[in-house]
Image (cartoon, rainbow, N blue to C red):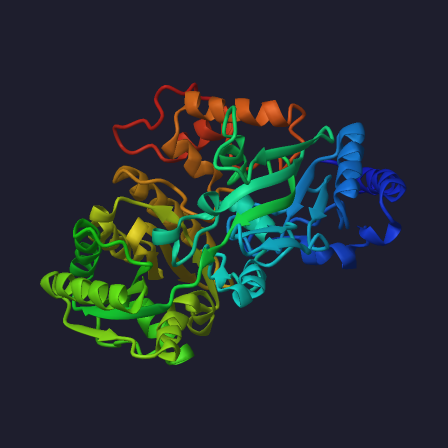
Length: 492
């Protein structure tokens, strides 16, 4: 840790080098200018960066990388800052590189159904540009009005329609990337396949640890002729969870399949007036899209499966406005939490669909144990959970309890055969939980990939991949009576 005087000297050195590499107006160094970059959407973890730089083209990104390598300055890439795992949190002696000014849609080809965009282009802006051609970009995170494609690539973002249309990795064909040593790589291709290793899939979801994306080619899909959503109510969350597995087991792949529990229904309905059933213990939102005939048939099949699974009521949207209203509640779950709680902590884990009921019961028991409320919203179709832990940071110890509650949820996800993240990434939030899921050999394999791209460990350091010491210490903190977690790790 550098002293204040050492940080000031380091800042002067870095600013001088950066202003030789990029125009001075692209460099922010005063505290009042860098303060907006001290955290991402996980505002509990904050750190003022040394310097912020906003390049305006790829050549400037290459020049910034040269400065970082020459001065051994850490660099944290940042998109719109909507991430929820602390992946864009700065480091005290490092640079934040914001891609906000790399915001052009370079080319849109309706015949090939592709768009070439810079990383600072907003997710929803791609669909807006493609709409006149009857096309859109399928991955739709709840933050799609603000989040950018560069951040989506870093986190492998999904959304409510990812069950049918896939995550970011399934909808990106090519990425242009600048490595820490200034090389410009083309990963993937607009062709059906490319020779060699699939490094594009390695890069997507790497959370800024391997390079800076400067251009992305995305796949566009035709806008469905018709889309309708069925809202099914359940008087028991376990039956609601079982209904999700039943829909998929019936061979139906809805465009969206979301679940909300009573707490989340109760906080959302007064906020958006979506028409949710306030008497239900859980609701499912099941969307079908395609031709009118396909949608009618699929809605009928889904309704039959949901009734057989114990649905107490089913409402089907009759108009596009009604469909959007039903989705608006799910899309606004996070801001709705702010109406009923001073603070909330959004977790992100993934489990096998068959375990939804078991995990919901487990989360309810944990809420009682930790003395905190929890509202559950799920991308239920692919088992991606988003429990919203409600707390008040002004009350001593509540944030620490919320953190412990979140870690316990992730441990439960791993215990039932799931994983600690679905689309939010690891960042700083879940770095301890990586020790729960992966062995030391697996973590070393991840580090080997990191070293191949970034041997100096300058890109987004101290995130995602925990050290041996961290895992050992975290294991000691979580030893149960008569048990020793991670017994194969040496204790320090």
